[in-house]
Image 1 (tube, rainbow, N blue to C red):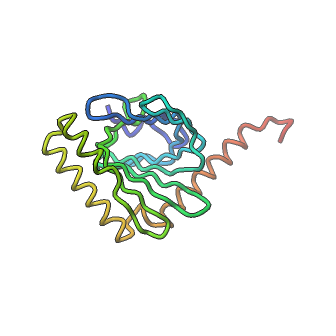
Image 2: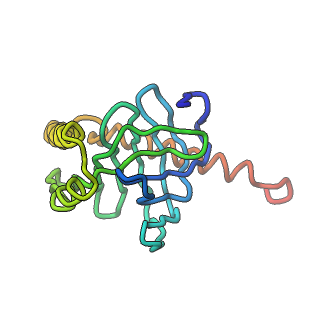
Image 3: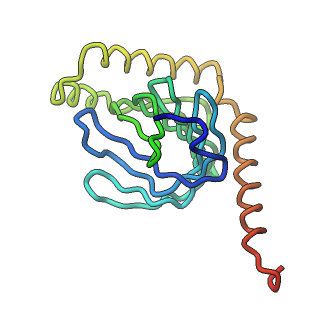
Length: 191
């Protein structure tokens, strides 16, 4: 059901992340579509409600350009902060759009990248715990480790999307969409 023509630039879309056992892990209430390619959904979340599995709710504080890959076992969230760009990379199944939301299954392992290019591998214990508790197949575990290693190599070599000008192009596209929306929302008497 993954049809490139179903999402268009400027559309709002939900994002839903699940766990291996099918339980809902995290939901973003809105994401603005910046691009849809054969390989990736590029969206931005900015002041979006996020609901966690334990029902905690919070609102994102800054724009985050998110890359949901259709064939790769990770997604990358780049958070634009005053102190620099932070990347949060989730090891997860390839993402699909099913007409309702962009969806994937989160496999616990994460890579956080700091503005200076250093990075940290997070949640290895959680990965081991869930692998045992939810009986991750050996093949899934191998794919997850390979995806983590692929991300590490991309970070070290400054490969897209870890390249500033690439990310900056999407940030400018986001600002253009915001400007276009505000212009169309103006009534003749307010213009």
